[in-house]
Amino acid sequence: MKKILIIDDETGIRQVLKIHLRGAGYEVDTAGTAAEGLALVTEEHDLVICDLKLPDMDGLEVIRMLKDRFANLPMIVVSGFIDPDVVDNAVSEGVFEYLMKPFMKEDLLDVINRALSAGV
Image (cartoon, rainbow, N blue to C red; front, side, top):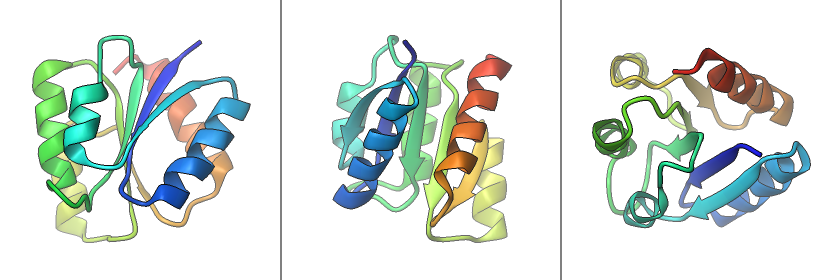
C-alpha cells in the first residue's frame, strides 16, 4: 500500500483528502504545519501533497527541505493561490504537479497515479 503525507493547514481539506485517498487504497498521514510535516515524513512515504500557504513556513521552503532529504520523493502542490512565477518556482524545485484549489478528487487521483508511476 502506497503511503501519502498531506501537509495543509486547513483541517477540512486534510480530512476530506484523507477520506478520499484512503478510499482509493492509500495509507495517509496528515500534518497541519510545515514543522509537523517535516517531522512526520520518512522514507516510507511514497508521495507528499503540500499546500503553499502554511502558518509557519512557505510551502516552497518545505519542498526544498524535503527534496534535500528525499531527492526522489514525488510532491504535489495544492493551493488556492495562483501566480505564474510561483508555479514556475514550484516546478523548478521539482514539484510533479501544481493543483489549484478547489480541485476534483478524480483530478488529484490522476495526478497521484501519474506521479507514482513516473518514479520521480
